[in-house]
Length: 326
Image (tube, rainbow, N blue to C red; front, top):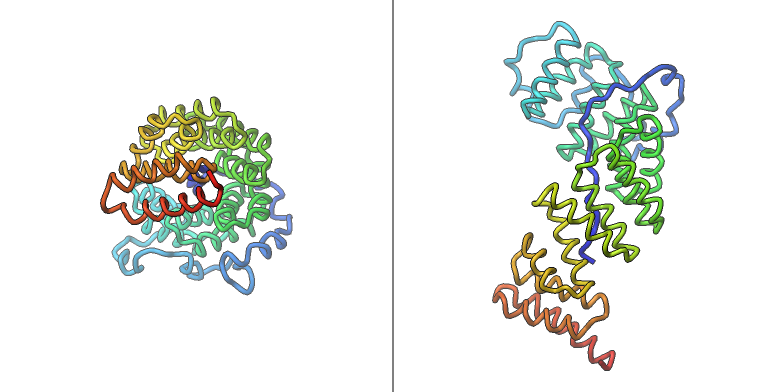
């Protein structure tokens, strides 16, 4: 099927989570469970000095050699925050690392470094920063959520679920954690639980096209077509360029044999030949071979450059027709 959820990504909000008593928690089991993320033989240790440069994944430090020296961790953090607001992510991380050399126990700074690295796709460095945050504060919601989202992306769903549940227990306003828990519940076939998670996420972020799309797909999975359509349309009203919602809407209309509407939805995000082929593919997977044959033929005729792929599908569906005796 082409329909699917919109996945969760790292949240870069720098929330301050209450620390009272947190450092008394061991946290060792959590760190051990996540070692594979950073590829280390042992978990990263909080150290002073310049040991944090391995968390940096940007341009050479020489690029920032003209930056004025800082006199305090607070000054470096302020500079990092200013660079972040300007979209200068490498410079922001560089400044945050300078602050950590002066204040190696600032858990929120480790979290910021992790969130930026996660956004940039530097998974190992993000994981190391999140782990360092959790060594200082084992119930830091942002770091728990960040690691949970990374584990989910790596299909380590049970470990991800554990971390994300801890994240929302520490901070009930983590909509990305609720969204990810919803996706994994759908994958387990726990559809009622999934919709509860999406509802929790939407209560936090009601005009979030990603969440409405995911809730729609959850309804689609159990055959609640009208509710699925409503959620997809809501997502598109919020974000008319939401590609996954258009694809999911096209899939839904194909299942409902509303083929003109399916084509109209799909050509919003793909060439017409691809749209015909997609409709055919959905129909073939549903066992509707004769109609699939019709749409594969349309795809092959619609674009010479698409001729090979469409005809491969056409040949496959004709073999299925012959086998089924239809």
